[in-house]
Length: 289
Length: 336
Image (tube, rainbow over all chains, first blue to last red; front, side):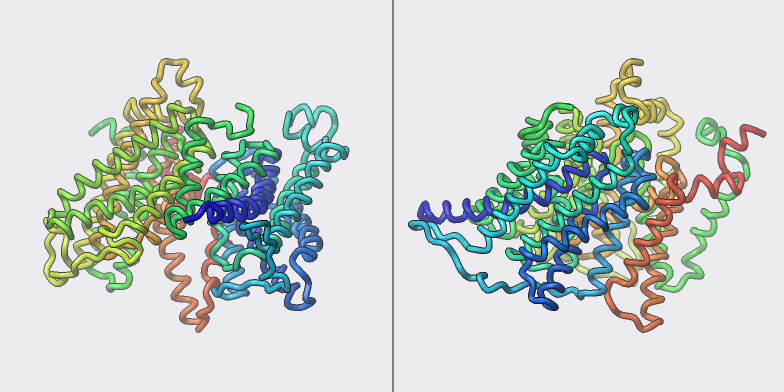
């Protein structure tokens, strides 16, 4: 196979990887601050993707436009979920938190199955088949748009955590729970906001991913696992790490699918995870806890 | 024998004996459908018990136990189908392979200080990795599945593990009972106390001179060996194996639901959990069929809601409060 074949795959993998990164960013934010393992992350994203499909069908809304109302919707859903269901579990052992989120995930997957049926669905946009050509390299337009949107949302998130008071307060909570309470921060409220932000992130990522893949109700657990792997590879609590790891995993999927077999592409992902856990357990950009 | 039964209230022993007798007699009255549900209950009670050794006793959360079920099933089935090896010898091989696998994962994780959620993700990753591997392993049937010849269904032969559902029922009952006794022995042994010390506070346990690494390895080895035997049973009872099904994350979660719902770290919890959840899932299917609802998903939405309710309202599982109410727990006996 010629070299540009690999270059093509690498580039499109990297662009998809940025969207993966945004999805994982949502998980990383929740994990890093609330310290709850959101095992329903992929299922939440699938729910957002179905809403985007409905909006596209009813109003003809492009998923990249729909990501704003969907992000807001997911924020409210995440906020309420944390406020009502998850909050009492923050002090409980890890495995009970895990069971709670597994229960939520089971309900979400099957509610989606119930409402939308088992068949794969997607959204057709006008520019679906357009592409940019740079020399020998051809890139799909949708992939470029999705990746740019992912970068924009991630940048907004970075700015939020860096420059706003709420963002700084959330970082304080993550840094020192007790200290945050001592200086009078409303930790419960901030946790709920954080969960909402994480949900909004994954909702937006779902809208972008909708341009690239089909949706089925049963895809949720796979994406949950993928998001987890990316967070661990990138480093817990490191936002840049999640984006970088998303990129790495996206490229490894693309090349793995090319070099081994398309159906074995996630083997490369798992191999990377195992290697990172063994040789750099703090993640590519993380600090050792 | 004495330390094994010491501290168990007499009425608990009586209740256990009654439950055992009922299970022994069950095939005489149960119709084939009920029997198949009971076999599944016993299977989940058994693998739940095996998983509980790792999480409930030693505090290591494995979310990839389908790995050991799958590898155990494939090892014994491949030996049987390709070389005609007797299932019980195959079971020895399955146990050896799975123990080795468990030890490899254990060494990798515990040597590098991987714990908690990280450890859980590592176990999932190994299970998924193996699933994809088996999906492409042509000699083992790949994604098309591996099938065992179904023969001698009317005669029961325990030595070759071919026979009627009743035979499989008693085999599984023996496994489950054996696991219960083994776990009780472990809990009252020195090892059991070390495990619980590690579970509660690993640093403190190590400060007391407990070799945490070694005992955690022992827990993984025992748990994976026992789970492998469950896999062997699975292979010869169902006679077909598909990587997509046997290694799936859903299977791993099914295994751990019983002990978590029943009561983690307890001996009876995994059994109670299995006997609650399996019939619940099955009767829900029946109910849906009876109501004429065949929409996929309805059953599992309800199932998930039940799970949510238990997790929210009974954080320690179903069994501890029941045991207290019935006066079957050891604490109460001691207080008297």
